[in-house]
Length: 521
Image 1: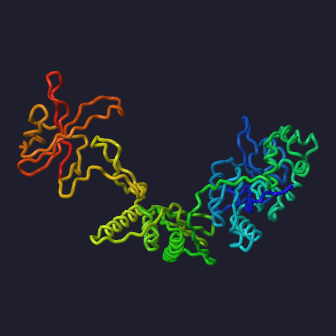
Image 2: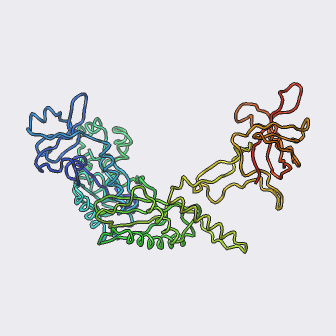
Image 3: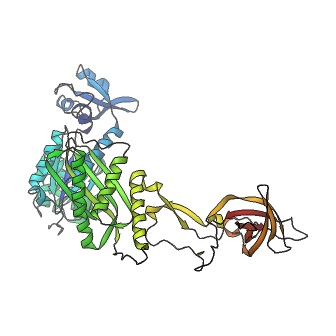
């Protein structure tokens, strides 16, 4: 029996006393003053009765196992302290621990309710080897008040199973099948009925199964039993799904003496921006989304993200965006006792093309506008900086829609109403919503207006262009409305208007109505 040829390495972390740690050993825990030998019962309602839901080391030492009712526990042990089970708070704590584990690798996944799985392929040398990495991880978690078990192996299932049975273990590559042989068959994670059937057949350990032919096992205990066995032995690959996206380019600084001063933090971000820019330049790309992660010594992780309107890899521009963001935070960055790790990553990138400044200076103007957009997005939020893009419709008031500039991208559809050089605009820059009704006297049946009254002021038309007929989109709204005939008109004072007539002059139709839809500058 041979192992998979995969060279990936995984680190499994198990938190067996998560709820108990949250309530009695973490900083500022509500029951931190309890003696170590006094049980804390974490109970939940099961079938109308309160029962022990989460294990507590002191309770387990006195024989109070999960599932025991509160009444029976009080009959056995006096002076118990009771706390209500809070799965949401436990889940939030696991998420915070997972954020903190990003310091070792960006590939972190949840593994069950109280477990984490880290893909540490290619990063162990940064921590002087896998054993040192695991020791550092578990020691830090213990210093934060958490009880943690860990194992490293070449398969996630192998690492997880070993982390449930040993405090800390590292399995050399290719030795997964040998390492899991002594484990009980419960390591397969099968349902109780099949576990009982295996036990009745005399198969009590993984060693009893691992050398047997696969076909009889699959026929009697199910195909997934064989699949779980091969994953456990490291034969079949089953990659993890990271909980956060992996950055395209990443740089970090580790501090043996934590930093807390704002100037030091911004100086570190500036240096990291140079490193990330070099990585992006080597790829021929620019970043559209950057994220800075700040790891406090007490385990708290804070992340700050900035976005750009176009691909960018200028270190000074990236650092300036984070400066704007830090200044505008409603919840200021709290360094606590200091940050011992700061990381900067580019999570969304696009091809970067060098822009040559044109002789008329338009390229420089575009760069200035893009820089302004980036700074506004960093200060007020990228969703609040919006631009107009054309919509696929002929209805003027629906022709443009607002979208965040940072989602528009470089290849935005172009407007079709651009006039010829030297010609007046075909559409006004400002429209009334809704169009305002006017009283107009026009040529019958399709002529332009001769005069119109708008807001009690009479305008005599000196020049007119049109009509431009726009029919309703009956296939979209399912309703048939009247056609519109648009005219560009200029009164005797030189003011220019955009009017339309709704309907036609006919004996069998209602009298058409006139509306003012926009003003030309």
